[in-house]
Image 1 (cartoon, rainbow, N blue to C red):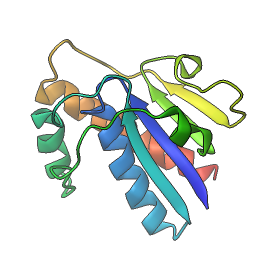
Image 2 (image 1 turned 180 degrees about the vertical axis):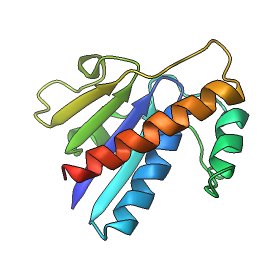
Image 3 (image 1 turned 90 degrees about the vertical axis):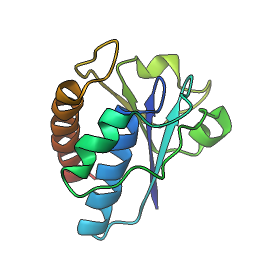
Length: 133
């Protein structure tokens, strides 16, 4: 089984969307993949704009909760994908897995227009990522 972690700052928007798309891709392609989503400084809840734009695609992320990044968990991950922050900033010492950094459009407050743009970019990148697995 391959383990993939999507890590964002607050784990309230882009990393949650990425995890949902990754779980969908794994199921579509019948791949044995475990998906984690974590944050460096998690918010209390998932952003409402992220929930709304995922709903537009029939994907429900309401039940997700932002979760703190654990170096112990990351040591067991095969692929680390960070959102808008260098992977080097969150990789545990001695970890030898693969990492990628995705720079995404961001705003101070997440509005639906920005969330929709992020969603579409993330959906494409997750699909491209799964093409390489």
